[in-house]
Image 1 (cartoon, rainbow, N blue to C red):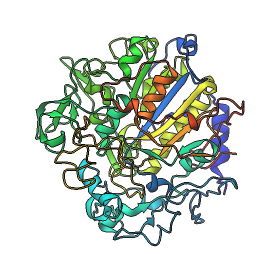
Image 2 (cartoon, rainbow, N blue to C red):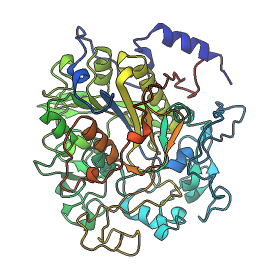
Image 3 (tube, rainbow, N blue to C red):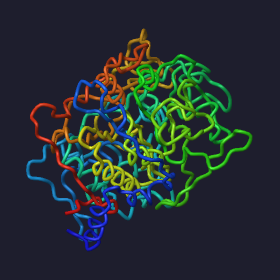
Image 4 (tube, helix red, strand yellow):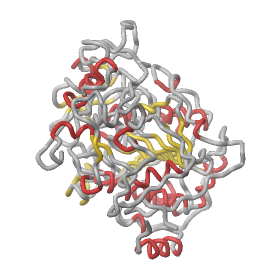
Length: 528
């Protein structure tokens, strides 16, 4: 189905290849530009693949079945954007397998959420309840342990909301990206638990040895409730000026490596760009991050401190949210320390200085997190961002990875392989106090892999209309960076040495390049 406004949208985008306008709704206003310089040295870095630029878009709180339960079969009601799959679309491991849509072992059956139900309650996605929902691998206790209802956000399903899923009439853009590029149906959180562990595993593959600094109780934040151990909850990064008050504050000891340290060690450009990171004011050098935005769920603060993993490490933190010393310094070592507001990414992209490795985090209203965001606002951000990258000269050697920090506790029917065993009081995966039986495990409090989450690769080099079944996790993205840019593994307990490769999602040999795919940011449909 082609809507009338597509023609004007297509005309606008094709006439303005600089793509300033698509960012207007999703991002903060662009900073004044300096004179563009020549493409940065990232293009000359020695890489093991043709990929010279990696852009990781790290979303919030989605299980694989929550977005792809019936892929590629959409309901297609007449009032919603349409999705018609390609005839050769491969099968994925979802709820169409084994009759799980209608004969599900959970106490509530899966059901479709439509576009009018985009704003939902946030589910329970803590370390222990997620393990309990798995019920020793039976995958049948989600309603009891992670399901959360509410008078205005469960649409009459109560805790059974946890079994809800969207199809290609709501998460239309993601389904269209999967049709044109590569998607995994076997990618997992590195460990159980919420946002902070997921973000930290993305950049270091290791949540162990976090230090309690100050604030509230460590119970539910650090494994075993102790003051030093693995991070299992949303402890906030100690020292961040823009932390909320009344929380538990943690940090990693000086000298604890993440991928930023390794990139700095060889002077490769990189950056974490997050919506709302830019300070709205300073008082005696202390930043305030007071920007807010309005989405379908209402008004919410743009910056979420515990979604910014580099802030937990003293070597890569920018605790006072200092801006880059100049636009030309984006991606390099200066006062911003590689931590930026999302608007700086647009500056870098427009000025021909895209870093070799880029992490993007939407402002909260666009990050997809249930409760304060939603899949439609998330789609706006994803499509505007990807449209802009594809319109840029960098597209020719760029890979975009869409991944998520945790599952939010949403139902998914696939049990994870146990890579990290653990036996702390918080574990319940294979019995009380148990995540496997190896009591000599050095990964205590890091039970994983955790729940299954979406993972897509969008690139000219991505395999087309391809579903990858090999096992990967959040630290597989870390492993790709290390391998592609010839960096040594972080090691010291990092799961990067165990992580499955993303390379099977790419085609580096046939010479067949995947096309650009321009989508409508509102509907997610392909613009003709």
